[in-house]
Length: 142
Image (cartoon, rainbow, N blue to C red; front, side, top):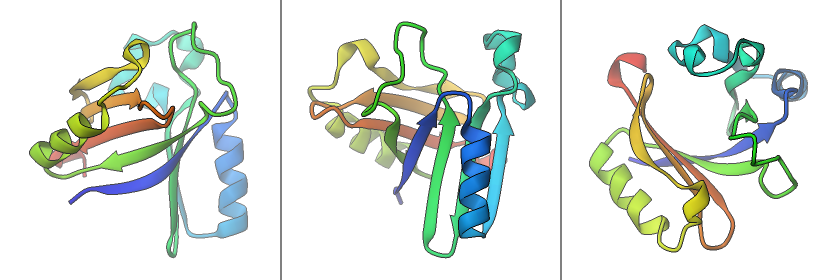
C-alpha cells in the first residue's frame, strides 16, 4: 500500500526547523544526519552535518523533511522547497504509480527509481511543477 506525506526541503536549517515543530507539536522526532549514513562518501565532508531525513509523527500529523542537497545548479526557491513523499512496501505497485505520474515530467530534474543504500528511490517534478519523491525501503531497514 502506498502512503503520501508532506516533505519539506530546508537549506541547512532542517534540524532547527524540525526541532521547533517538534516542540510545538510533540510526538516523536527522528533526525538522521548525512554523515551517519552509508551515502556520506558521495558528498563533501562539509555536508555531513546536514539532515538527510527528518520525520515527525504526532497523532494524525506526520511529515518529513531534509536539507537541500540537490545539484548546485538548482538553488532552492519558493515552490521547490516542498514535495509529496510517497513510500511503498511493494516495488511493483510503487513503480506503476511512479510511471503514471511522471508523464510530462521535467526531464532535467528526473531521477528514475534506482537502488540506494536504504532501498529504491526516484524523484521528479511533474508537468504541474509539483515535486514527487518515491521510496521503497529495504525490508531490513524498516
